[in-house]
Amino acid sequence: MKNSILTLFTCLAFGMTGFGQSMQSNLGNKIPQESVYLQFNQSLLFSGEHLLYKVYCLDKSRRQLTHISKMAYVSLVDKNGNSVFTHKVRLEKGAGYGDFFVPTSITTGSYKLIGYSEWMKNFGKETFFQSDVKIINPYQPLPAEYLEQVVDSTMETTNLNISQGVHQNIPKETNGNGVLKVDLEKNELDKREKLTITFSTENENFANGNYGLSVRKLDQMDAPSQISAQAFFKDYVNRESTAQAPSTVQNLPEIRGEVISGTIVNKEGGTPVGEVKISLSLPGEDYLFNVATSDAQGRFRFVVDQEYDNVTAALQVLAEDSGSYEIRMDENKAAYPGVQVVEFKLSKEMGALILEKSIQNQIENGFRAVKSDSIIPAQHAKPFYRNYTEHYDLDDYTRFNSIQETIVEVVDQVSVRRLDNGDRWFEIRPEEGFTDLNLRPMVFVDGLFVKRHEEFMDFGAKKIKSISFARNKVILGQQVFQGVLSFKTIEGDFYSSFYTPNIVNVDLFKPQPKKQYFNQTYTGDNTNDRVPDFRYQLLWVPKLDLADGSEELELFTSDVSGTYLLTLEGFSATGNPVSISRQFMVK
Image 1 (cartoon, one colour):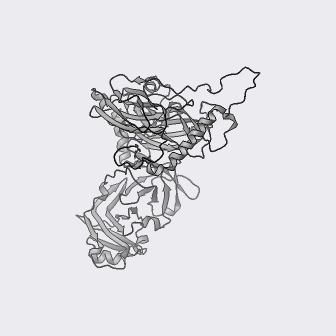
Image 2 (tube, helix red, strand yellow):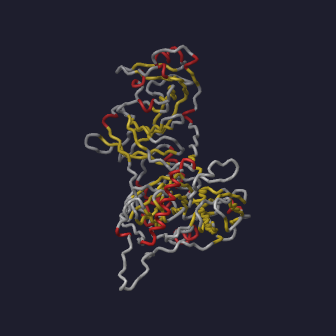
Image 3 (cartoon, helix red, strand yellow):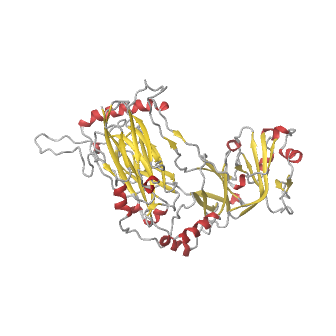
């Protein structure tokens, strides 16, 4: 198994975009199957609320969180199999998290929350995680199919409030396996009172586990039951899989990171074109760049193994006759025909509860500005091609009008050469040996890769802030460059104003951002004392750190009285499932 993964890793690392038929046939048997578990905060949602979720991806052979896939996918699907949303989630040590705000455009109905990895697609959608979700939208007319019919008084009455397959949402308290303990300071609290929660374990494997924590009010309306980590492990992981390894792998596992893929075809006829180099550029201060080569079917794959801030990528075919080709990106639409959902009915008696909660949600969203979550900035690791050896801040030198004059008069070891067709190209002299006239440097402007240097030569040199470069050869994919040359403009907005037909701009299907979720406090100089507080979700911690063997968390109750449920789900370092729940009252 390790040898198979290493072979695949090596191929991806060197930019290979296709695999031989024999290798594809063997991967399905040699790389273990995976299984995805979704922990989420609620299975009954109103418009204006957030679905908060955490993804756990397990290696079914090791019974532990996976080291294979670095990406997972989460979809919310309606009863017709149409995707409401599909999120890409970056996995760290087999786990990741995200959220979805339920807009008023989504109709009342039954839905399915689905989780999977790219590798799992090879074994059929029946291997995906699936759990029922119910959504109520009080801002649209309720569909007749979800309204309870009035029963004639002369007819025998039946309980229509609870439809088949839906259970009263009053879970029993559980303590997992007793190795990891959760203690509440109090079991009965007043509104806006502090509650201290203590987590402790003496077992190193459980201390180094991966857990998520949710504290939320139990709804008075029925909700679909949720799958605990322990039930998932028993029903999904331990049971013998009926899914057979495919004879030919269609979807490669995302071993190194996020995959951006597509096909290169001839503009005339639309036939796939192989052995064509294509570049991917993510512009900006912390820009990323890569080169891939299309396979015999015209397919190309870029592996992005770092976080980034961009929402748009720039792709360019590197062939001299690039105008003859068309880039077709793979679509990320997901459809799930035949999905089975749990139906439900709404009675007139529920009207008061729906009205009360919808008003509270509107008030909460009205004060979202003072209760917002904060996005954790992307962590940028500098790739090797951004290690410049020379730097010129042009304010330290005499300013010239043209870029060519600036290069000639200011920058040492860089020159401008004119080709036979009249185009001008930058040239960087190597550290050792003679200049290879067949090799050109990588050229970036504010992080955007400029394939044809002539298109940048007439840019105003007085708009440029600095010039940096490195003289060593750089190999990306199967493309060799003689050095790297980077221009930074004063405004830093070159990408937004530069146009060339060589560039195809692509909206990225980005992984979900990391967040620090809001936690209300009422101590010290807190200025929110007079702000209404109708939180149903008191706390959401998708990454609970118990590395020291114990941890204390604090939360404050809201102005909503009732029964609240604390739920901890996750897996120990050795793959043991953990499911713990506690209840407390707010008066």
